[in-house]
Image (cartoon, rainbow over all chains, first blue to last red; front, side, top):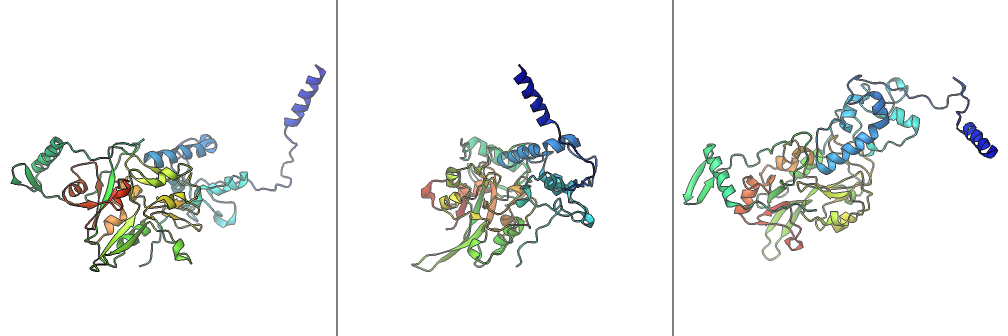
Length: 133
Length: 256
């Protein structure tokens, strides 16, 4: 019995948060998220923060494989609304070199690789230049 | 799972369609009893945009009819239009590595020297070998017959490129930044003609069809007997390239 109790106490110590010292040596700057068009999102911010990847993942399969267009969740719609007004992109450095643009700011903070834009265009209203005749 | 892709051959339905068109005021002349000549208003009339939220229908089969007799020698307008529309703009030091969604090929009859030029691209097979061999299921055929690559699952193994008898597919060799927002494409994935699926879903025709100054390309629904393409295929001899492979192409040729 004592052994179980000891194990429980040890486990509680292990999961308790490490002591934090406010303002002391913050290595990674907190993301600076600028919402260009507030209040127009397809879902509340809490839901978007938690589920945007799932929403986009299911939508992409429905659009590409079944051919369903015009769904509320769409990467292009995200980009059109969230692209920085200064640079027109959801990637890269934000205005004045402080913080980063919408997608990249959080993804670099949490160190989650952002694969979308290896294929998708990160700039809003981008017009491809086209081949020269 | 394969949906029936053969055109509806119900003669009664064709008759009703013909009668309806006649009533609608199109040119309608009786040549002989039971044989009618109908003027087709707009050869490349825009197809209808699919409503938002509805899936591609297996009742439709998109196809392309290319009249090689009309294809002008040396003209590359379809290639330029395709590559502009789809953002295929990169020029690599080794031109063999450039992506090629559509290309012109020249056929020469050695006996009499007759030359024929034609554009060649993904033939949008009903039984596509690229889909058969894909190890990840990335190579796929949509319900309306358009063969696509799901780049989300493509690992760039290039097996489909080897399986394709038409050399229709390319691998992207370099990182890209100039994509058309509607046509995502990137390094390490295989790609090919999508029949401009993003335009077709909006009710437009593919960029190559729209750009052809000779009107040599006709786009439409092969399953709809009243469409211009189905009527042309029903009335003139058309060819599927390497028909012996029995892949049942969505892209047909005339005048080869």
